[in-house]
Image (tube, rainbow, N blue to C red; front, side, top):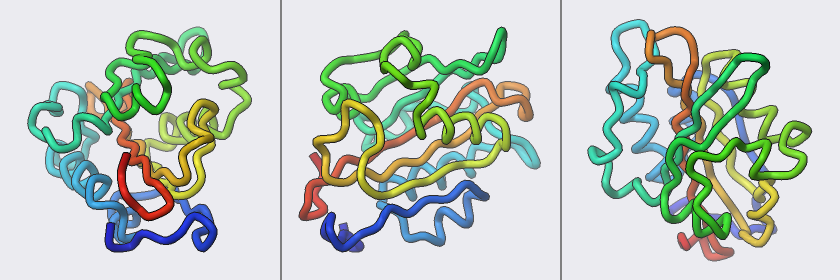
Length: 174
């Protein structure tokens, strides 16, 4: 990765905003690719939905992809719909089909819940690079991730398309 910095030299960076703002951050090439794909599949003036996204269309990203179903009743809740092999390896298990609040103790009080809730409510992507905040990922030196809102009807978020890249101290993926 061209912009890789040592874990000590890099402070966490992140934002919630339009895709163009995320792309201006010089993200990891895989993050850039999924953001550009998400923009390309979006219907004019609307958010893309699951029906617009074919994971097989981005084979180089499959291991790093994950999708979350967003449920709103009785409250905001997230469930793993798809978990790529690199993500499953990082968690030590495939969490497909499990609710995040059941899979991760304290999830509803975590920064991750806050990030996902913000994407679901603001209908904007969220990007972050830095030390991992997710419970099982504390052993990784650096992650870069993006959460992209998706809506079957183009407006009401019912899924989040996510991608996480796991990097060692030399900026190499693992």
